[in-house]
Length: 459
Image 1 (cartoon, rainbow, N blue to C red):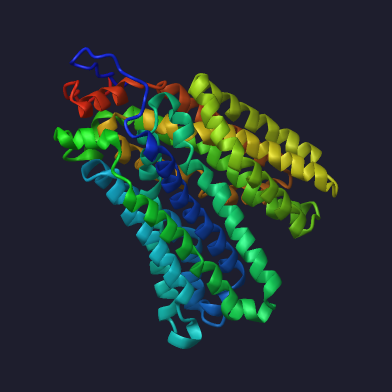
Image 2: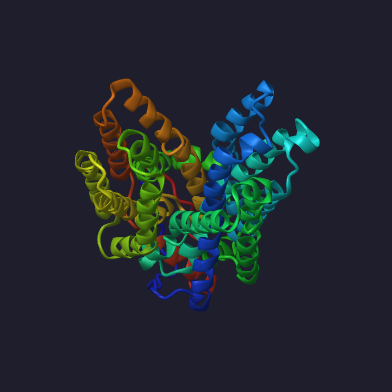
């Protein structure tokens, strides 16, 4: 457990943030980046299934087919830890704001370039190769985005309300999914199938430039967080933050990684696997399942920040752990009641499943941030986010499909979700509760009423 620094001045920590006027800008800046990430994810997934095989990966060329498999299933996840290591470290060395401006630019430019990339018929094998490289660049940017986005909103806000302010980055997935599906729906209705395959899909990628521009406008106007400014002013930045996290805060890192597994797996079940299972196994129409997922995502826009706020009033680990248990239990109930073409029950089932996810995902950002000392937060949070994504959400849809095909029943799938929930409980048990004294100490330091705290470590 990390040691808590005590203000050397003996001053009593206060609860008010230093820059209250920047709170809402920081919240919006955090949300726009993660919303862009998930907008891109949803648009890319749709394009990869419908457009890319025609435009970039013609079936007549086996080599491009291999590249397609590599780009779709590996690049986006392999590159995220690279981004987490590079930009997480820089976030502790040069500041949260500079990193967030850079990562947003990387994601945005790569996405827009995909929208204007010539197809295979124009530039041949160079087209799929460039697409893979742009996808890799997106993953690197995404890997560095989350940790900085969480810190931007949480370190501006009152540390006693960290659950709510840190949830800004967590609203990104449902917001991005809704924006992407809305854009795709409009394009599908406005264009013929031939027009969509010809140029319509490119519009969906180019629209992301609006999110990039808005996010950059907000982020460039913000100062860095009060916590980092205090660390920087007194030369407390770590020289080798990655090495220091592994040597001094390994247990917090493991706790932060494990706590993410359950939410990632549960989200993959209710937003990805249900599409396949509902259509192919239960006979639902695609629009029925998609509508249910979109309704659940809409509820999450409000449930995630609510869950973060609830975790500020009650013990964060208790709220998180209770939701992990309820999510695992509901999975068994969900599959049990899903038989037959009952669309209202499908919607209710997915909404309740995503509600359980919200009460893990909402407090998650604050919990992960709180595991690390302020001077190592960017590195630790980014490493936890990217590594957990590989072992959690990245392989979950594949594992669900393999289990269903192997056993012919949903029960192993539900057991897999339950095991993921148990892994999350282990992570929560290894972690520590909220500690506002660390933030207050650095804020007193910035005000000139305290002395530089000693770097925290593990016992």
